[in-house]
Image (cartoon, rainbow over all chains, first blue to last red; front, side, top):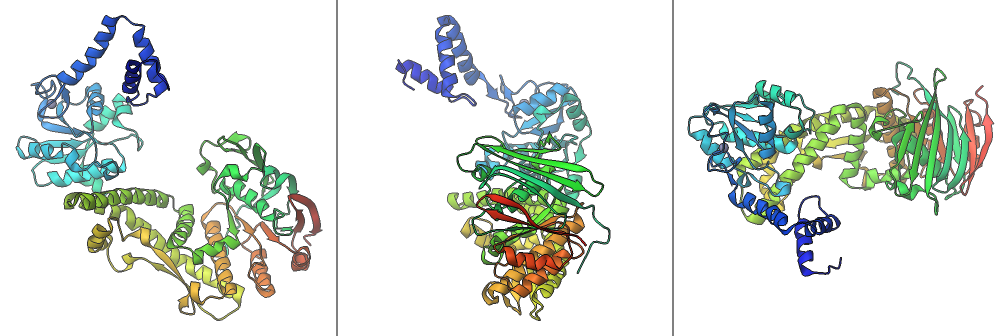
Length: 206
Length: 385
Ligand SMILES: [Zn+2]
């Protein structure tokens, strides 16, 4: 692709870095922005700058947050002794949508997959163990995807948590294997959190 | 010889029609429900007819995994159609169509399949081919694939375990590679993968062990029958898991795994040892003995698929005189024309000798002469009486 201007080319390259956006689509976006009011485009750009600069991760649970401690962790009506372990922020959103869960979260930031270069050190597992060692947590619920990598991560976390006096459970999922939390319907997901089962029982069944 | 106690519902291929499949521009064949022979010189296309049947049964070519390469030169598509007739006279139409640069279309009774896997097992078949030689001469993966394909036909959980095992194996290998490259080691993560690998690998090992134990006597019977000889043949399942638990095996092989940066022990290293008179078949077996061994292997596979499946499989025998003498071919025909076998398709280069082979057997028999992609329909038909 030959561009009439270096500025256009740079803008196209930036859009093309987004997932699912090719160079043709990127060019459409750029030409669209050029037809807009400069003030409108300014707002568009600054929204993302503010998003990146001002949004933090909660110091307690790693959920995205505008303050040091997120709204869920700082809510006095949530039970801080029950922690639900999830892969990423989308899972928090899905579980919150069910209105069935009153505990708090721990966002791992991914699951263990050496093929993708992700080991336990790349996730917030050490911090999870630290939280567990504080003695204030009664139960941890693992709500990771039902893939092989999800199983691996569950098993690894279970082994790390075994030394503490915490009951470790996993959500009972009536969802077909491969369906992620994000796509599960709210009723099913809500029910599966209420009907969680001790993790030990699930390894015995394997 | 083991035969099925209950008569299986027979299902035979009555008609086959081809358009632009390999070297056939157009062909229409009507078959006997027992023996059908395709005779013709090398390169005439007789094996391609067997391959068309392979498509109807297993949705793919026996020889070429690239569907588009099975389209006739300079044409845009191929079509294979078969009409099967059941015991009660009911007709089943199977259609396989392939257009260049498009997805293969597979239909049963005009209804397209969403998943090809749903078709597999409906019209089971077993192919005996000169290409089977790779089972003896090739690497261990050929023999594992043989075991896996037979077991997967009757044990639905087997394939799931195997796929899961391979997934964990790739993850564990990636982990070992990282340890090597970063010069570090994390026993806690490795333990998790070891437990998963053992959990998925054990059922694979148990299933293979049970399969070989049941398979070997059937196989040995066929070998004895075909060869008429006293030499003892054996199939031995080789696995390090015979001596130790999966967990121990992984612990013991860890030092080597770390050096090699991949998993050096487990069911992915299993093998079958083929023996004759106490020696390795590959080295000690003559060409004739090896060929007899392979045919016995396929016939035993046929019995397994028949006895664990829902329908009598079709048997395809490609190039029956390949490395076999007159006497062994006769014995092979005695076996496959007897009880426990259904419809059979045979290829050979000689029209005369194949006719002779069946003339006095008193079973339904049709002979087709094949010449460079053309079928001289039904050269000879013998009545069933
Ligand atoms: Zn938080």
